[in-house]
Amino acid sequence: MPQLPNTFGGWIVFIIDEYGELFLKGMANTLLIAILGTIIGFLIGLVVAIAKTIPVRKTDKAFKKIVLKILNVILSVYVEVFRGTPMMVQAMVIYYGAAQYLGLTMDPIFAGILIVSVNTGAYMAEIVRGGIISVDKGQTEGAMSIGMTHWQTMTSIVLPQAVRNIMPSIGNEFVVNIKDSSVLNVISVSELFFTAKSAAGTYLKYFEVFFIAGAIYLVLTFTVTRILRLIERRMDGPDTYVITGSQSDSMSVLKVKKRS
Amino acid sequence: MSEYIIKVSHLQKSFGENPVLNDISFDVEKGETISIIGSSGSGKSTLLRCINMLENPTDGVIEFHGRDIRNLDISVSQYRSKVGMVFQQFNLFNNKTVLENCVIGQMKVLKKSRTDSEKTARTYLERVGMLKYENAKPMQISGGQKQRAAIARALSMSPEVLLFDEPTSSLDPEMVEEVLKTMKSLAHTGLTMIVVTHEMSFARDVSDRVLFMDKGVIAEQGVPEVIFNNPENPRTKEFLSRVINK
Image (cartoon, rainbow over all chains, first blue to last red; front, side, top):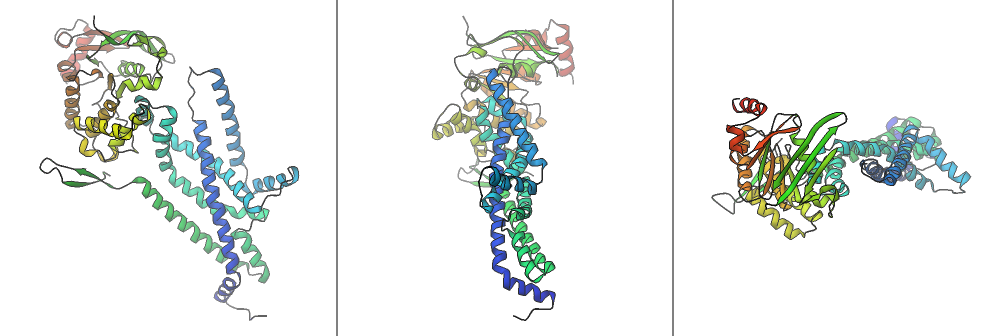
């Protein structure tokens, strides 16, 4: 039996020493679930939002109108159900439901990624739809006036601007996913919260263990938001543009700053 | 016999219960520059938007080279690429550079190669004096520059007709001139143009024909000398005295 520490600092060092590897594994799983869940959720949201914003014209065929209408209803139900119930409940229903009625025992990590993706997708659908609406209608009209189709207008003009506009919200979802993946402990996903709970049980040092877990969560979310900020700046392109040639010197180069 | 590019017959447009255009008929010959003047809300912009199929007419027929535009053997997209439009709010693609704005339609709609598209785009950017700003994003240039770039974008599609929807109305006064100058030089190249404008000097000096619209109808039309010096319709007189003496 090793000598047990008797100060707060002592316990922190002791726990990190004893459970560091376990924490790292939990952190890795949390990150994996959050990253994949956010990316897949974003893709789901993108598809749902694109489908929901297909324009219906009076001149369209009845068949197309009906198909779009049904699709719209299904997608609305999806959004309402997954936005309107707790992710913890969704985890229980999906994980145990699949086991009981489909005979499907999912790997907990896989189940975790699935649940976070589908849940995030419901939020992202509305976020992306908001992004599409936020792009000035003139952009669409400009594209239509030179003969671009709805699909071309969406992929080249509207969505790139919409996605740029919703980057802060995507960042929010990412941060939420890092934290809320902790609810997956109910289906025994060994993410950070789950590993912390097991670590705390041994010496009954809940405060110290969860203090460390909290610190790790904070480091994760802080790092992720900084990285997203960088990506946003990348998407904005350079602050300056270059004018080549002037009246007096055709080889001159002038850098112009962006108007604010 | 002269060749009509666009012929509008008995065009009607209502937004819900609200009639905006009522029995509009006129035609446009190849190479003509037509100015449409009239107060705000008289239906000028809606008329242009119907010609470009951004709005569906409630009734009546618009013909392009003698064929109903709802029944052409080319797609709506291809028709639009032949009938370009310049907007009051420019509507340049904010996520693209000036050059890309002029290139994307040629590549996506006309299926031209990048090299060809860039060559054409640069030709027109040069013509409107915007070539040196080809790498700028719309956010980085002034209103007048944006509108000239938008004109280059429309021209890059090699349209047969170019529609201008109040192209100078949202510009600072000192920028109006540079855009009008560009439009004047285009009119002299033989391009067919329909221009909705509040710039009476342009309507008077550059256009071949002027349509005066009032409450959804063409109240009077004719050559600029007659419309401006000797209008028949009292409403035309009243409108002109208001806008010219301001």
